[in-house]
Image 1 (spheres, rainbow, N blue to C red):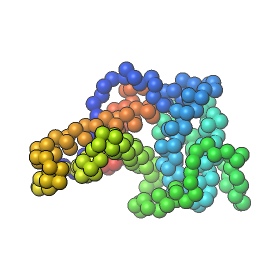
Image 2: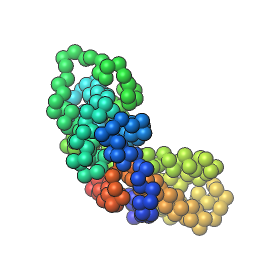
Image 3: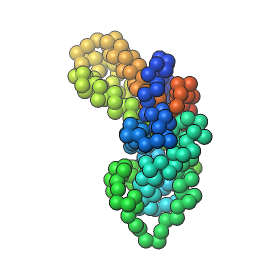
Image 4: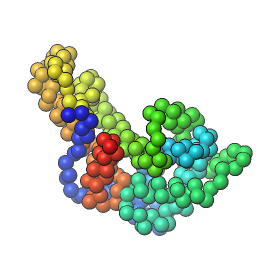
Length: 248
């Protein structure tokens, strides 16, 4: 069965209080270096889904980059955090609502100005966002749907990056490169045998390695999701939503 998304086990919420979004929520009404750091980590991951949303609204590449940068400057200044408790506790939902509010009150000036008062609160390298946007498959998705799709793919990419880094640290970089295609797809006849020859192990051992890799991948996807919700009960809902977006 193709396009499977491994979902890690629910291990409860014993460590949930220390996740990025809950740190931000806890400090929403007071200055907190920990909250700023947590918010920064979240925003660094989700700048591209927001950029894609702004571009799909019809803004040029330059204006979209300027607006996205300015949005994050104001977000870090907490202009848009005052009403955060009205949201349902999901960073994805909050971020899109905040961007819509920002765009509704922002007018792109006829001449480009340097936004953010000369500060760079989030690194958006020139051309990087637009290059990625142009490489995305063409579609007729609404700005909101495009944002959600890019959010889902970002979650998967972040989890995959962390899985690759873990394999590299444990000396399994070659194994990861050979097995990563089986994280979301089933093997064809002979695939495991060919890889077994290269790794000098049995085909059965390859199957076991794939199973373990999928399990760890699922755990990392869950961990990425956990950083963006305010309570443990939201994790499974977000996982189901992510699956629906990627397979719909």
